[in-house]
Image (cartoon, rainbow, N blue to C red; front, top):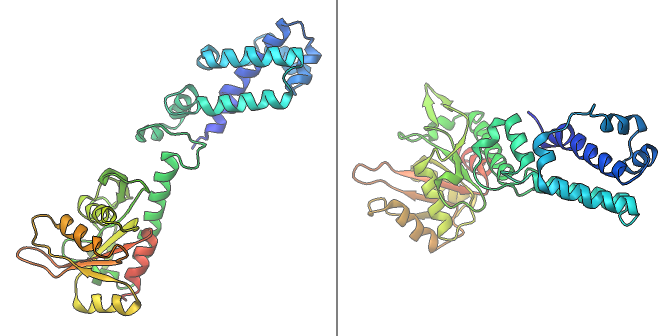
Length: 300
């Protein structure tokens, strides 16, 4: 695991300081003055000047880096730019270069190939970046799965088709924005079997149920399917959850769920009692995978 900050320290900072030190020396500043302005030792300035510090060619060749060095160098030399302002200019540049597809982001991706799995534009520093949002969803699903694995008797709630626990990103637009268990959660000789670590886009059915509920106005971000039994629905209602029944034999079960939820967007449980070739199922809707797993625990 390599942090983007390490890339900044190892690749950007030596290059930026070398370029800036050279710029200031060319403007007539002494080695001592350059050291004072950059907050480094005179020996460090000497190393910069003699090329003894590694410079990243991609960073050095970037026009924005060159423009910032020139602007900051001129300002520091003239006294028009303070050290604080120079620092701010450099920090802004770092954030800009850390954007997906930019020089620091590319260097980070080389060091962390797993980042290439994330499409779209993101900033690693951004608290709302795609990476952070999706990783938080995966972490939430993992916590929910651990709850199910450690819930004695959960296998009795797994339907014949298997269960799945899914959670979506806040702005989910399709199943690719919903994380779940690859395959299904299965009952293997009385033990809850999780075949693999959660991934995005691996659960079409339960993910579609969640998306249909959200499209109808539900605030739920997670869904877990369990077997249907009238006693299970009664138990959920007794605990205080709101339930709604939908017709599984309509042309589209997701349309049926959407219509059922639209009539009561605050519903916690959607269920159907089966039909020709259709296994009866209960869908638990919750704010996060751990909460959905907790609903299942309350049935045992």
